[in-house]
Image 1 (cartoon, helix red, strand yellow):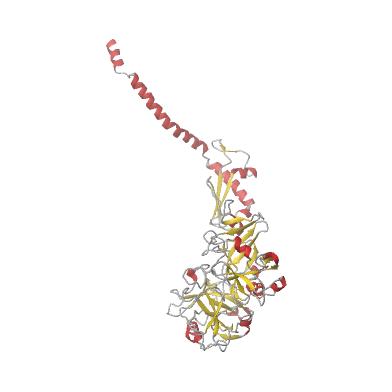
Image 2: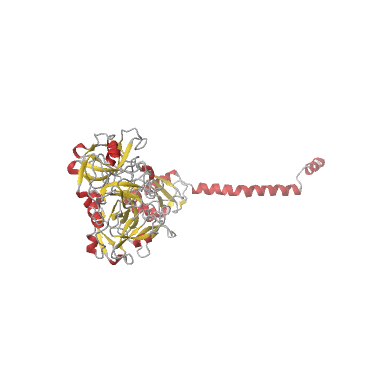
Amino acid sequence: MLKNRKKILRNGFTLIELIGVVIILGLIALIAFPVILNSIRSTKDKISDASKKIVYEAARLYVSDNSNEFFKYNGNTYCVNLETLSQQEYLPTKVYDSVSGDEIPLTNVIEIKYEQDRFDYNFNNDCVQKILYGPLITVLLQDYDESNTVGLLKDTTNPNVYYYKGTNDEVANNHLWYGGYHWRVIEFDTLANTLTLISQQPLTAIQPASAVWDTETEYNASYVNKWLNDYFYNSLDSSIQNNILDSTFNVGIYTDVDEITATEKVGLLDETQYTRAGGANSYLDIKDEFWFGNRYNSSRIRQVTYTGYFNTADISSTNGVRPIIKISDLTITEGDGTLTSNYKVGTKATNTNDVQVGEYINVPYNGTDNLCGSDNKCTFRVVSKDEENNRIKVVLNGLLLATSAWAEDASDNIQTTDIVYTGVLTPFINNIDSKYITNGTYGVGMYEMGDNYTVPQATTITANVGLPTIGEIFSGNDIDLSISSTKTFVDVTIIENPTVSIGYWTMNRYDSSYYVHRVSYFGNYLSVSVLVSSGVRPTIYLKSGTSALTFTAGEGTAQEPYELQ
């Protein structure tokens, strides 16, 4: 018995072995304890499905009662924490899990997504609220941060006003397609719920006045003010007109722009607005010449040059016109605010009766010369609507492949027997099916230095095709005739033959000798010899009214023109 006991003792653990075992067990405990603890905590923090249903129902009721803040557009995401639901009595002051009995922290966040005509609810404490569509001001405000030095900034004199400053890279998502035109948002007022817009493109080129204005009355009587508030404003659909508010425009001398003000529906940019946006190379600089509303002295008006810097021009000069309007807030249904995907309001036409001026239409082309690209569709833009004669006037959004002289001389107004007609326009129109087009009137009057924009339109010819008339909408450099293929204010992919020429003919003579007006890449009119070879931009009339043409697809935008049946 004693021998066996000694054997057992001899085969037992030594002290060192025991110490080693204790150390190993301790290390195992150190490793396992956090895992076990986290597992306990995870189990404790886990919210049961039954409790989730209760919380989601509270969030649903909250959304229903605050529907104006939760816009039903696919992709919109909202974040609401339990504390908000508790404070507004959709949940009690303390929330307990119905299974575990543990308190659910009110810091938890519910992510609310709208997709496919329904809201979905999920716990997600990393939720980032993103409103893609809804009131435009609400969408734009998401880009504001107090630390911003460019992009969306807050006005230091009015905390309700926000404005944009910076280059096109820094201000990339304030593009708006509205009423047939491409706009940029300059500023908005969260208290008044209004937005101030400027046209992205120059919409015409004209002489601004017969004499420099130095009173409000003289400005009101100017050519450019009449064009903005009569010609342009009256081209807009009534629904757009009703949303444009009276606004005060600064039309004083450039050193004191509010020396003179004018209250109108449509106006011009002033120098302080341009400077605030960043001046040259900012998003307002389109590398094209356009007028300000401010004079320099008794004979000259301020302008932006094609370099983007301030300059002055004689009152008899022609430059681009970029309208400014102030509108009530809009509900956005499409787009992301970029150049090629403008924010849009969900309206579109079904035929040529309800199309809006400014919208784009693809017209089938029957020629085999690839004149309008491989799709054999020429993209036109609506210039005006003539309801009395059941027709709409459209201009090619680009140039024809061939350049041409205008005529042998300029001793008379243009005729259908002149060079530009026989060589280019007539062969072109012969490849457009007659079921689409109708004859129309074209302004062929002479536009001399000092003339009003209405003078060229007073003398007309009737034809089945023509050229732009000075003073019409889109009778300037709206397609950006730059000297390179890089366009500064339009999407080059939607321009027909964008690099064929750096200028194109109008219908109008400059004098009775050898000079005719053509649009230049600077954004003004140059008087050049009739024998110079220039770009050709045809204008035609499409049938409307009792012979309305139906659209089978498209939205009327540059990227998605209406498609004729």
